[in-house]
Amino acid sequence: MAVEAAGIDIASLVLRISVGGTLIAHGWNHAFGGGKIEGTAGWFESMGLRPGRLHALMATGTELGAGLLLLLGLLTPLAAAGAVGTMAVALITAHLRNGFFIFRPGQGYEYVLMIILVACALGALGGGGASLDRALGISDDLSGWTGLAITALAGGLGSALLLAVFWRPGRRPAGETGE
Image (cartoon, rainbow, N blue to C red; front, top):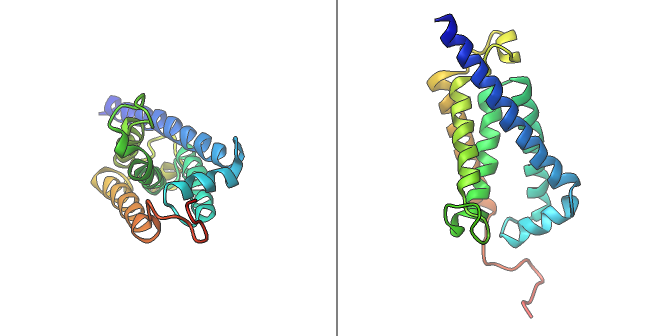
């Protein structure tokens, strides 16, 4: 049983580092890459997420915060839910219409789907032995089916709510005539 537990701890650590690091890089790029927050806001507006600046700030904050929490192994299922939520919004607004493969024009959804599924698995695994969840004694309460449910429901419901309230594809921003 100790070998099995060690394997789970290692798997959790590897996944937390890879998904957490990816989220931080993604959020950092939204904030400081190319067009910075203003460019990200314009891109979000073009996909129908309005107001774009609000969504750029929310996505950036979620990716940076969830990424850091995953690296620390703190509240792992909630942090993983941040990955599920942001990637589910990206899947629906930007990638789904382009087919499965990422190399297709417009980029398919395989990448964001993989992050969603790995984040769900991470919610089920929990923070593992090298985590603040374990140090705080909450890792057993936040893993297994409970961790998966927290991750999938919080991420899925959060993204569904955001899309229902704010996503208006095909509609032009106020004041834009289309000429």
